[in-house]
Image (cartoon, rainbow, N blue to C red; front, side, top):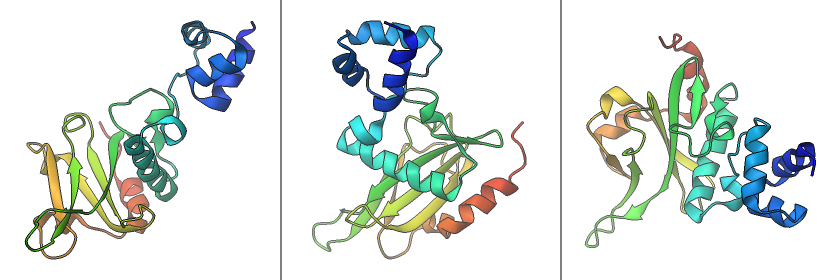
Length: 184
């Protein structure tokens, strides 16, 4: 089968197994042909991922909409170490909904994990979504330098927290990243 047919099918589906069904080929052969052709095998977590993957893809889409010049690293490499590159800076995007953290008071918090990206990303953009995962209710922009020893952080839905000092209007993200000098 022609490599061009395999590449076009993969670009349409972004799923090795779906291409295999469509073309009647084992996924291993498809993978080899894609690699030979230099086609990035990245998948599409918004269509084929777990519930968590789909939510992460939604947060990344929000960021891409707000900072359109950012290069989406997930379109270049499967499970990229960070989500976006911009002016040489590495940005990882997180999304969370509030969960109950205290049974007595009913207080709720947004939780973000940095364990995997803490040493690779320069900035973390944390979107706090409403319960329906539709509306961003808070946006935090946190430089890695401020959380270098943390694996996660928790932000209250209401009340005070030092992490709320990093809150900004999401419309300010683009200006921030475009004004950052080129990374060295």
